[in-house]
Picture 1 (cartoon, one colour):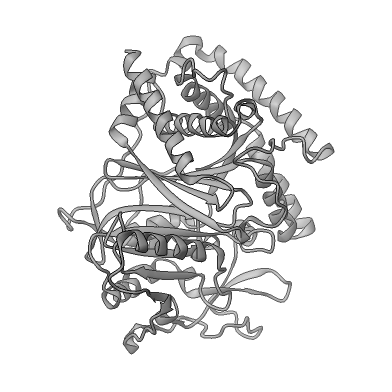
Picture 2 (cartoon, rainbow, N blue to C red):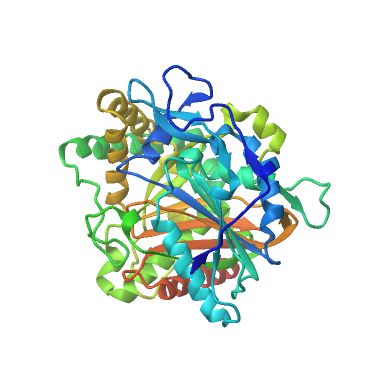
Amino acid sequence: MQQCPLKLPKELKIQSNGGKQENDDDDDDGVEPVSPTGQYLNSKALNSFILAILESQVPIDYLYVSTQLRHLLLPINTRFSSIMVLDKKGVKQWKRVEIKLEDHIKIHIFKDGLSIESYDNYLDEYLTKLAMDPLPQDKPLWEFHIFNYPTRNAPAHAIFKLHHALGDGYSLMGSLLSCARRTDNPSLPLTFPIPKTKTNDPVKLKGGCMSLLPNTLCAICETVADFGASFVIPSWNEDDITPIRNIKEESNFKYPLHISTLGLSLDQIKLIKTKLGTTVNDTVSGILFLGIRLYMQGCDMKYRKSRSTAMVMFNTRNIRGYMSVEEMINANTKIWGNKFTYLQIKLPKLIDSKYLNPLDFVYEAKKQIARCRNSPKIHLNVKRLEFLRKHKGSEAAAEKIRSKLKQSSMAITNIVGPVQRISLANHPVKGMYFMPTGCPQSLVITIMSYMQTLRIGLGIEKGFIDSEKLKSSIQKAFELIYEAATKSS
């Protein structure tokens, strides 16, 4: 593999305010504070970035894409042209610098005329390398990689490598989608599936307001038990060692990461959620939980009842859909950044090998997600991290986050994608998915909708989890739940 030297026209070099890569004490122009979460995500304990993979239907014209990056992506937020520096007090700040696009656009050269299978393997190895290599701290924390070789999924791939400190999935995916256009009619805005407010939830109607009381008391008792015990016994909430949870001590972002995906029909998932009176999130969580249990049971029957939990990430913004470029620029400070929280969800246990009622996994996911959303534990965790940051520094808070993640078995996160087919810089996008890296877990699952497909990404530790077997188990879980849901009507 060779990297192609990239020479861009001089007009593609952008001079931002500041122009220096060190934090000059006599010149604070172009400096803004890094948020606490941004500091946690770019630390010794955590070094997380996101790979956003776009499958292009045509080979990628890097010169045209470069122009679009300059005019559309970079103006959205100054963080795309800033680096992290320390001020006099040792606090991290964003410092605007001169940015040269040729330092951020990477084109790698492979042999021509190879088989599809060979290029699939090259792409797999390429993504593994991208997931392991840290981003240089002396340049703005993003890169754009071009893989112009045909694979089973697409004729070419565009890969954005974006540091998590720049923003969360909503911020970063919103930036990319703000640069996209509908292929059917570029003058029309992109639309996204918007969940309807439910008015006939049987759980809420059945007991009225009084049904909230036992749920609230249960959440408070659970919070007191878990939160209090975590101070006395650090491993109180630690998961069992299983075929999806390794026991290695070194940080997970050093592990070779294999990324694979599978697609599920969004129409079928919506049919399931309508039949069961749940949400898409509840339904997909139930499918994943059952699929993972099936995988674990296939490794050894004893794992069907192990203690295993998932850290499920949720967007905390009270808005629907994504904003346009102009709206993002105007509302920069209000919507940008890392505005998410996590809920620790227990995987339901398999009662027996016959999966008596696979729908129980969806109902249990629904119940746990609803309970955790209303739990005081979320706010207590935020307060504890802020306390640690103020008294022991951001590294101590980042280490606390990392240890909490290490105690669980996996992380799950999702992003809503557009309903229509899109083009990015006149390149029609066949499919898309994403994968965060740097999590101290052997399994990370991402979910993204695009058109009528729900794309599930699996980031697994190579040599530990069987990717194909896990995908097959999730597919089987989907079929079991779909069959049970359609028969139940």
